[in-house]
Image (tube, rainbow, N blue to C red; front, top):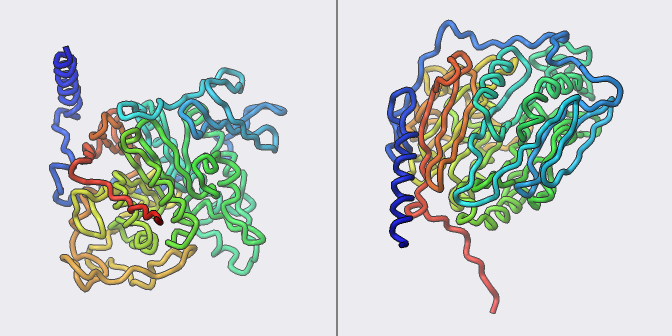
Length: 475
């Protein structure tokens, strides 16, 4: 009796995997087929990569409610699969509400709350959208329209949402706010940009949960050295539920996936609170319940573009060993305004048990798209120019092994870089089972349903064993 059901299950799984192994008539590669030969898609010369802001009178960003009716409604996940945080603004006051089970909030109609499947090895959201560096431009609207057409169950925003810190107090955009007032002690940013952004995003994020992590444009330095105030006030985070004392880093489950949202602009040194929290959080993950472990933060460790090249090296030096030891599968970053996917990599070396790093800071913000690569002749930045201006520290030295030995940059596209392309777009993650997840990247300029980059990311738990530190007990 037992053999028949197992046989049926095996056949069913085989049929399902065969049915999802082709996109646009082509077989989908998997990470176990790699490492892949590095690919750079030539720049489309007709694609300029500049973005134009939506005008202030665009109806999508105007206040349409009256009196104390709620607006800028947003849903975020909480600690359990059937609970959520609902945030909204009425008049000039913001509210946050915790909802357990199903519920509704009205803006003239019914808004249905989406909840996640319960955690389990065969339980996953159907589609998870990944975006970064969004802004509020006509390119942004293309990204969100395209993303919405893919019917996501969850949206991850990997930093840099409204870019309010690039607007002067009269609403005028400035590519460098601090440069506009270099001697002014207070750099108040233009908060109505946050309201514009919240109104534009409401049709999506009032129905689909949005999980946010801070980027450098959420810094918004204020008087008394306050930072990230709007970020912490306008989004809901399961920080306390996940044992974190800060909105800058937290974790949550979505079905059989454990997400670790790390702060690239909070202390990440091994003696700091974030590192201690991360170690504690990873130790608690039960891979039999949540087989997939995904980490996100804003500035990438493995990007080959000139922009922000090796800027987060101190964070990588502090945390990469821990993520590798606990078997993190995928990393998502933003910050660099382009798309790039790595081969599995650890400490700049190809490693079949390494992490797949995906940079997706191509949401469409008002800053231009990243085009130049550090490995191209004449483009290698000086080491002294690379440290992050906010976090400081210098950890990026010349490579000591491999094809780039003795150099600060490679002289060709690095082996760890599998695919890179300068274009705006978004990504969709579809976890199929305990070992296979389908990743697709969609360019804004392509027709809906067209895929720009596609790969199966495959976990190998039998080959790549998680190695948590042994707990020593005093006898």
